[in-house]
Image (cartoon, rainbow, N blue to C red; front, top):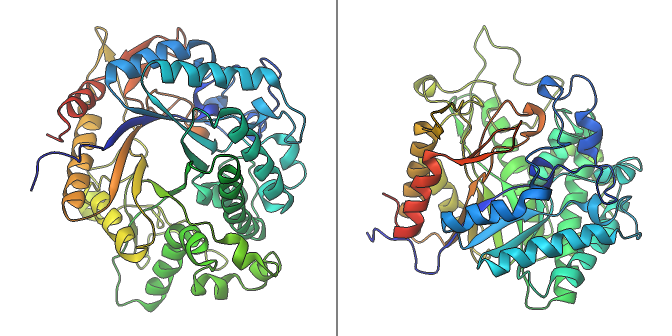
Amino acid sequence: MSSHFPEDFTWGTATASYQIEGAFDVDGRGASIWDTFSKTPGKVVNGDTGDQACDHYNRFDEDIAIMKDLGVSAYRFSIAWPRLFPNGDAVREERGFDFYNRLINALVAAGIEPMVTLYHWDLPQALEDKGGWANREVVKAFEDYATACAQAFGDRISTWITINEPWCVSWLGYSNGVHAPGKKDFNLAVAASHHTALAHAAATRAIKKVCPDATVGLTVNMNNIHNESPHDQEVVDFAGLNDSNLNRWWIDAFTTGKYPQNLVDCYGEMLSRVVLPGDEQLLIAAPDFLGINYYCDGFVRSPRPEDKPAIEGGFMPFPQRVDGSSPAHLTNDLTAMGWVVTPEGLGNLVKRVHKDWPSVPYIVITENGSSYDDVKVNGEVIDTKRTAYLVAHLQSLQNAISDGAPVKGYFAWSLLDNFEWAEGYAKRFGIVHVDYQTFERTPKMSFKKYKEIIAANTAI
């Protein structure tokens, strides 16, 4: 086996607009659902908000210099929809376009390819007031937004991601309510699942119409779901539903125009009333690549006597860590998020995708990273566990590539410690430490190791 990644392999790091930009009320930016949600008492740890975040809006030149030192060839960032269209309608905010033009131009000047994610969860609040992703009208709004971005930035952006983790958008936002907009309605989640799939396809066509040579993909969060009770038919069925809900829904949609049959049967009228005639054709939008965000595997089993019910009121499709715990043999190997560390899962997952969806041309790991309780001592952050996580997952990925998995890039999550959604600033995923009082950036041990790996183009 070769000890090197392919010569044309893309090395990158990633962020998201609401998590790092700050400047929430600057230069005409409209309110997003995360502005509203984070300022709702009890929704975010410590009442934290993204009002300032990492102040990337004013410090992006410093962050680009950090990436230049890291040696990445690409940077994945997201555009804040309400910076460009404060109310999600046709009314533009040119100062928002100017900001992203400055950011993109600075990246190009630094020799770093800008990779844009159009939607990383900060929906304009005005669109949510009309129903958000549960309202089919959002599909046309997203198509128009994608068109405007392609027209404005397509001369310098060659790689686009339409939506980041539509599963989280749909299920964390509209079913269990732990993410914005905080709704708790299974019907809304099913509708959002369909509308995000339609929106991806519509945006793909819109970008290609403006930029025929553009490379367009979708980023999904996936894991391998392990059934630890294979003789319990209810658990077998539950595991299958979760796999379809998390791993298959969006990929099946854009490759075949159809959803997994077990979910079609499960959702029943909830789905049939939002799927319209002709949608099967509208869903199909063959991607140029599939982006995968991977953090850990998932596990299901028969409930133990001391467990809370794994299923309340029927099927509850929350596949990551579905029973709220981890396998006994992994309980001492958890991140600060309580997620099991399963590096072998990354290699297994990309091989599964290549086998099950051979029409997907290639895969990019658009996020992979870990949260630990970092401590800065004498100006340094010795994040040993995050460094080990990074190396182990890259070794797993390297092995899968050697076995034929068509993986062409890896983006470490995240460049910076940042606003970690419902966890606020309590959890740190960055390879660069951020002091949230002074905004000082300090590269961690994991940053230095990743820099070495990139320079050597090998995971050692």
